[in-house]
Length: 378
Image (tube, rainbow, N blue to C red):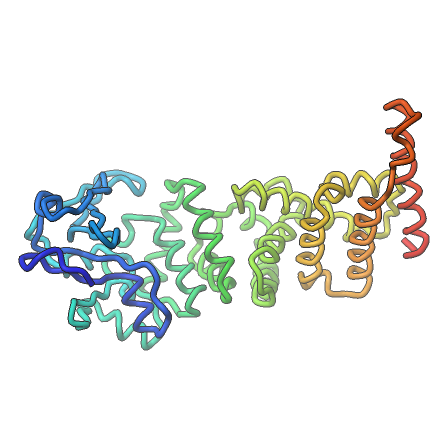
């Protein structure tokens, strides 16, 4: 830990201290400085980067140091705060504005733990608890609580669940941007206990606030239980994204999958997945050769076979498709895409018009599809 000078006091705070106490290797470290001012930090060679409140980069390490501050809610949204970062602000005051107790622990330069809100005990008991009623000033904290529960497999204190429920009833989350909501979702889907994230949103009446179409798709308890069970069985985030897309698809809400992602690559993957879902769920309907080719083209299977194979593999991991028939059909689509991309059309290059070449390429693709369908009995 780097000290600005003898007059100022520096503490490690937040996630670094929490993870260290949990035995997890800490990564980025946040520092809080008490007893100082912006002018003093600048004179010491620090570079100010914060606009709404003073955050400084250390001249050598480039780590971030923030002056201790308090916050007061004056408007809606995450920017609707006024801050005070005067020399008189104490470490405890700075920690009191944080969301949950396990994130409101500090460590001084000698390694002593400062824990005014009993976060260490909550770590031991594996509980997520809000620090103060000011928690409700920022609706993003609803998602953060759910995400931390998914990350650490912690329970949420009953009083915090009650606060989250009141925030859900009041529709506080509607003030958040889609980007901020989906950033929390993306992190939650990367954790081992993703189902906890959705379970908390359901239990606190917040699922309809942040993901209204998903809430519409899983109205009753059995549907909710099925989704949670599915997420518990999946290991990678792509399969979890596809599980969400599948839940919308079977409820004829597949056009709403942008509820879950704004990343173009993931959105395209989910859109392609909904086409495959429809195909797998309607196997009694025999696609003709032309429709098979159209399906593959819509899924970009002839241009990016690697991505298409990843899509098929991720679909095969969903519990709804853990059967011999589905796996055989998914394998057929994979083999079909590979065969079509390996077709050789060099013999058409010399003595054909563009129109004839396009026609013969199309005919050869349809012939290949027909032959493979015969082999697979599809």
